[in-house]
Image (cartoon, rainbow, N blue to C red; front, side, top):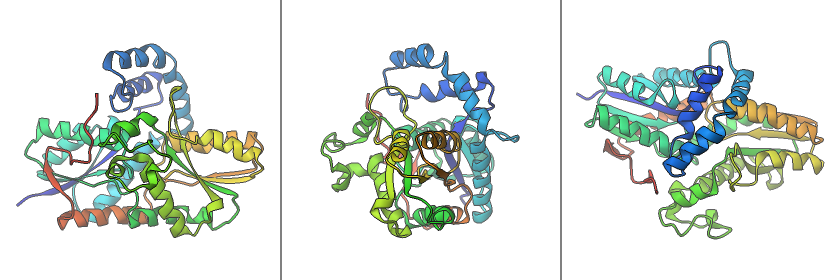
Length: 358
């Protein structure tokens, strides 16, 4: 009789706020061809000659500002999500980070040590992007082919518009929204370079070819991050009853000078204040656990940007974290898997996980 198990996948965090640990983490992260998708030699030169000499010290200071006595907020929250889902489902559940610890490979080996031969893979990314969902899945499947090529694997597809996920988002935001003390709600999604959309378009003929490409039905939407972000917002505002003049979609965390998805969160916050908006709230639906990008970039830097430009009240709405509705949603996905609702593979990602285009 087969034994089932679960593995949660997320981005990762440095082992500590020491500069060397942050440097090692950034090296692993930025040398991923699905994050910095330049040819390997050029990528190595960019990372080692232009980023690593200075960025680790700056990032270490940012991490130190949010670090908890027990460790990384992202890892701690992810561990809590792991424990909550294990309790809800009664199944062996492990956590694997794409970069840093606990590693994806270690998570897989722990499941194998428990006799698991049927694994449900849960990326903690609601939306598909080559630099998040895709790289995490591909990295895990490499470990599966190495250690357990016969392992039965099933992958949870992106759930950006699943009713349970939307309901969990709305419930998480409800305490902030019920105050009705805001001029604008910003949906701030993690940014990606525009070229990643084009690379992820299997037709090479849809993404960014027309102004309304995200609103035109097309198979490319299965791997189109921008479309999926827009759908999340559309479902959220309908469920929450927000009027069109009360919210905006923005993108954060850009790196380098090339065009990323726009509008940018920091520039929008500044412009809102200059235009006379005094009260802003920000929610980050692409992050299922609070981390550096939400706790420091949005909660701290975002506040400073808005207040210095003339704003008065600013609030970062917490991520889903261990909200009971989110854990319930994940547990419901597990039950659907157990009933055979998702495509099953053996050491091969499903078709919508786009191959790397070189």
